[in-house]
Every structure is written in C-alpha cells, then in structure tokens.
Image 1 (cartoon, rainbow, N blue to C red):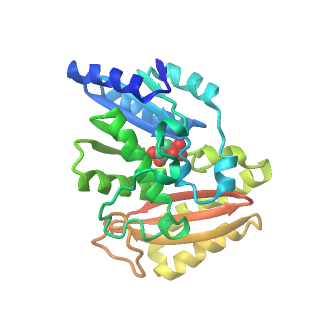
Image 2 (tube, rainbow, N blue to C red; image 1 turned 30 degrees about the horizontal axis):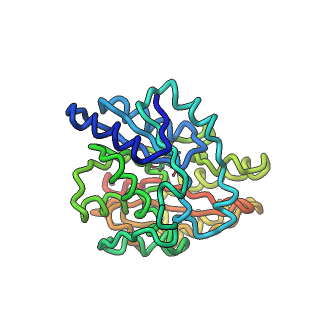
Image 3 (tube, protein in one colour; image 1 turned 135 degrees about the horizontal axis):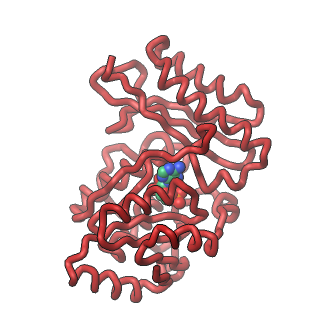
Length: 288
Ligand code: AMP
C-alpha cells in the first residue's frame, strides 16, 4: 500500500496501470474511516485489479465553517484500517495540492442535473453539491478509474455523481453500495464520533423511525407517515429534524402520494446537538 500526497506521483502510478491494461477501482473518502468506508474498499478490491482510495476533507463542500473545522481527522488510524484491505494506493493530498488556484477559484463543474441538486441536501446545504462535483471531477481526472464506488448512505450524492458522470460522458462506471449500520441500526458516519454517549443513544431513533416508515407505509398517507416519522425522531428531546421527505429514488422528486410505478425512498436530516446526521431507506411500493 503506497501513500502519495502529490498528484504527479499518483498520476505516474495510475498511468503505469493503464499502460499495463489493468482494471482500476477508486474509492473517494473524507477519512475518519469506519466499516462503511471499508465495505466500499472491499468491494472495489474484489472487482478490480488495482484499487486507489483517497482521503481528503474537501473544504468546498462544507457550507458551515464549524462543521469543516470539527470534522474528524484521523489519518494514521485510517491508514492502519486500510492496510489489511490491501488497496494499492492511498492518496492524501492537502488543499493546496487539490486547489492550487485557491479553493475559492476551483473550477466549477457545469452540468444539467435535472433538479437533482434542488431538493433535500441541496436545499438545506447551499453549494454542497457544487463542492462535491468540484472535488469528485478533479479526483476522477487524477485517478482515471474504470469504476468508482459510492455509498447509498449519501444517496443524493450518488445520484448527482451518476448524473455528472453521464453528462460529462466520463468512461467511469459508478457503483452504489448499501449503507453499513451499527448493530442498533444507526447508519455509520464519520460524524458519529462527534456524538456524546447521550446523543449517540438518542440517534438510534433516526433509523428506527425510517424503518418504521419502510415497514408501515401502507397504513398511512404520505403526509401522515412523514409527520409520524418526524414525531418518532423528535420523541427524543435531543434530536431536531431538519427534514423528512419521501422522494422518487430516480429523480429525487419529493412526492405527496404513494406511486406504485415509482421506486421511493424516505430521507432524513437530523441535528443531534451540533452534529448533523443524514440517513435514507428504500420503500418498496412496487411489490404490493
Ligand atoms: P465520506 O468520507 O463521508 O465522504 O464518505 C465516503 C464514501 O463512503 C461515500 O461514498 C459515502 O457514501 C460512503 N459511506 C459513508 N458512510 C457509509 C455507510 N455507513 N455505509 C456505506 N457507505 C458509506
């Protein structure tokens, strides 16, 4: 496992792989790795001859400066966790390497997202997806992978990256991977490290409420299940819902009634004190 912090070193390595005709998989992360990230690396390892992982806390996708400042950074531990999974390369650039022109002047990716960035996280974190596309487009250009792996935990991000990749006609296969959860159901997240034990205990209500909606939607209207989900989460005085929405899995358009022909998901963003948590779960309306 080689660790590079310079684009030129990584490019040289990746060029060799390409010349040798090797299939490459890439897993972009912001570090503070947990079993969710590792499941992506494992999948990439099993499907490709060469695997690269990046660890970079991308400043351009944070709309809240405190969130960026407090984001956990655990590089040494991350490298220890990665070692047994045998990625070939880990790329750990700093901001100057990624944005030599300054992060404010980083090129903006202009593609038609068909409104994918106008709902859910896009509404609540202005500029977030602009930053995500900036960093992912740059990382794709540096790594030139055949396949790139993203988690359904950030379902909207996965949808935006798929669309960006197809609009830019990049020859990269985008692979979505299921959400890894703690034993009690909480979606694994780097931000979980920031929760006190009290907030950590309360946070289990988020996945519990989403699972309730997934299993009981038939007995409710969309409005009622949404309100009920919010109530279940906010039963704990420690949690404050930013949004709960039910949306099309494909277009992410928010729906107000059940649609049998459309695959749906329920999405939530919740503040647990100062820590913002998101989660989402598929609702299988087609089976009924
Ligand atoms: P992050 O470091 O939060 O930017 O995440 C890097 C990648 O790991 C993204 O594609 C995430 O969607 C994915 N990821 C984060 N948490 C999980 C999880 N609990 N299960 C599966 N994938 C995850």
